[in-house]
Image (cartoon, rainbow, N blue to C red; front, top):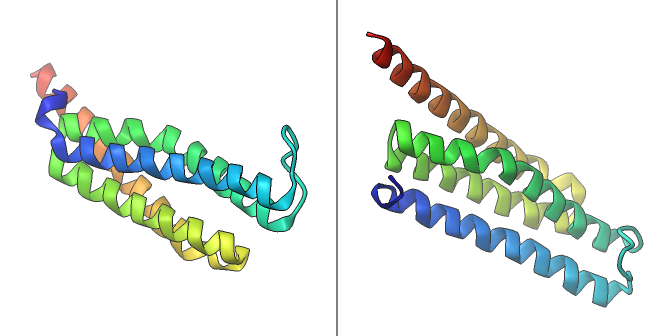
Length: 135
């Protein structure tokens, strides 16, 4: 199954790279703004970098299963396309939020809509598969 979803695998690797990048930004922010671990508060820019990382991880935990279920039960291309839109939204969110919290909404909305679409595609694919199995 996994070898039949190379596009989804590629998007997954890009998502892992995004998560690494947000973690790296937090580490760099700790150093730059003097926020010693385990503290997660201090300089406002550090706090924004930290929230970007945590929010991205929180969403990735929900998004990745939907991504792979969509690839398995519907289409590698559709899953990868929606995953790519989610990734684009998260990057937009991360850049906007790091600059100014008021600029995070557009990227967040794009990511949330892509996640919703992935959830519907995944759920629909599983449901159609179950209905077909009952016949």
